[in-house]
Length: 133
Image 1 (cartoon, helix red, strand yellow):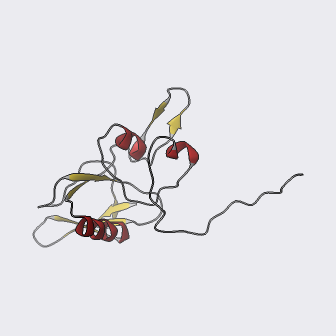
Image 2 (cartoon, rainbow, N blue to C red; image 1 turned 90 degrees about the vertical axis):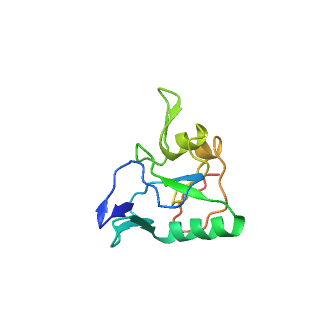
Image 3 (cartoon, rainbow, N blue to C red; image 1 turned 120 degrees about the vertical axis):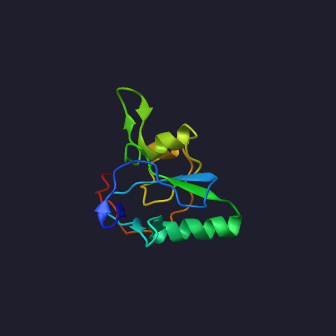
């Protein structure tokens, strides 16, 4: 979830002063991955684990970035009727974003159209089923 001064943000375009280049797109569900606070001079500042991770990777690899929220606020779902993706997946497919950082579930459908790194966080959620011989 992306918050600004404690209130959930809908989609839109937000950028951090002095930072440009590669685009990061993201929006969340229940987890608070990123927080936006107004500081004393009214400029926006992004905070949270995913932002710390993005800053560290950018520093190590040597690239600049611009943060942009996904307009529809979705992770990415394939619509069987239209044959189209939405959300972060669509932004990556259309090359409107170069990378995304967030708590996004890796599944076969998404892996067929975008690439994932190894997960940086595991919540231990799993599915159990009976093996029928």
